[in-house]
Length: 302
Image (cartoon, rainbow, N blue to C red):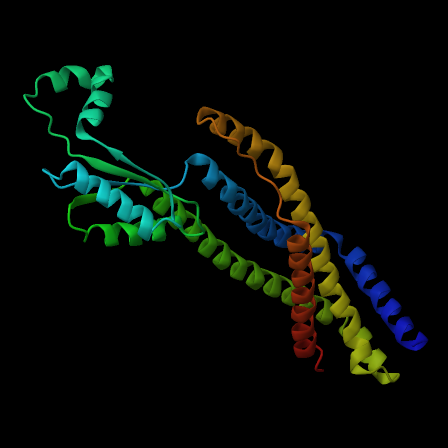
């Protein structure tokens, strides 16, 4: 056990020494990886911060069922009761809006009053206003209910008044896919950067490796410092990326604060949860070690 620990301490010291011997190239590689990592961190922060924002922007989706002209008051009440009986677990509120009441509400708006005075009769239909409960997929639920209610007798047209929900869900889905593609790009950059760094290090240490083999060094002994070099590069890049993302939060939150105030909402960015950041950092460290292993295996065969 002591021998194993001694070998790993030695490999770690060698890796740190090699980083110090080439400070500028090592720093350049770390900065490149860190910049690539900072972008998905900020993207994840935007995505997570947008989830509660979606709940603040508007209440649950609302549907308007325009009734067929000539529908009697009893039929309207029957439709309202049918809604409550068949979809009561999905409905937060359902109310009847008579055409006369709808006209009175429009007349109360000065922008509509003069235009409505020119009408000889009330052209508005009776309507049922249905507010849905919050759910994980409000847009899909609203569309499914609207398709069902369109088939009911007495319902002339169903209008989804919260179309923004579908657009917001589509936008968030697009962001998720974009972050996934960006994560793949980050993995490629980490592998390529560490692979090239270790390749250059292996070629630079070519004579030292040959001498070590002559005196009986095993392949594991030769490769271990390079694995630590890749892992340390990943660790340093992860910490620097976290620092850059944290520094970027202040100006971004200032801009978002002005934007959010204009809409009367509370929106600010926060870094992803600590377990998510820790898991991502461990993944980058492992990727650095894997890239180093692939590179040193290929370029120390001499």
